[in-house]
Length: 366
Image 1 (cartoon, one colour):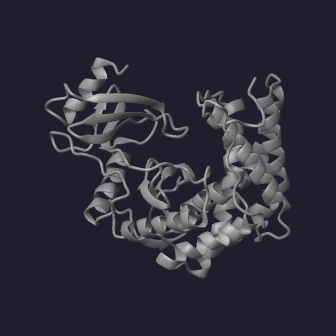
Image 2 (spheres, rainbow, N blue to C red):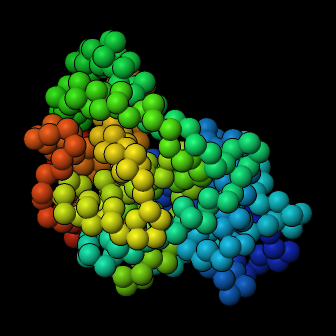
Image 3 (cartoon, rainbow, N blue to C red):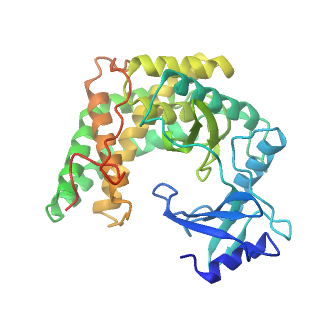
């Protein structure tokens, strides 16, 4: 049931909401804590989102909405351009939460359950097309420029912090926790970090200082953010982390989530992207740094959130799947014969599903 108090929020956009049909989808914004409802009103399918209190800020959401509006004016039909409220804004604030309403994008995030070369190509073409259209968007003094990548710099700083004692601190915090399968998984993540930390850190030290073209990027684009209708991309969603960085970070993030460690698929994906938006040699070199550095930093973050900060994540199946994926990626990175090569393993393995449709993992939380 949708609370009457919240359905009245639609009055921010519509004068009459008496015929609105609303279905709660719960926490669907990844692990950020965003809550989503699907709304049917006036013959339209819409998405009502309540952003978490911690992110984004009002200024941040204004910039993100500015990007989406900019893309809309350029004819980009795969992004959810926010609807203006009756007073001309694109969101409103209630009890420290930011609320927005946007079109419900068609399609299914089904790449990992049914991967094909055509879908991979379509995904990379869509990402490159987004980057080309976003290139002309500027917000304040933030926009197109050539400089060091903030994302590579952040990854290198995190790895240096691990070397200076944080990794040992994470080990101690995990050992002090009550025994569980989740704790055992954290140990595997920490072991994976140890195996690759020095080599990945050296790689980032070599490339993090190289100036790269910077522009507005997604920064957290994953396979479940691309919606497919057949083998066409019909939706690109979740812009909560959008900011200025190098496009190679988006390429690495998306390919890492879609094809894991298949060298054949990585090369095919990069070339498909470059067909639409060419990549310089420096940009190509930075893709591996973004990918490997991101995997190590992500693993450390999860251990910190779970065993130092004690955060709770209600999406238990998604959490299991994410940690298993990270463990396997860390193992693959550690086993690479050279610093820059990828293991030739053909296509990603679809997640197994239980009878009720939930994703299953090979270990269970206790």
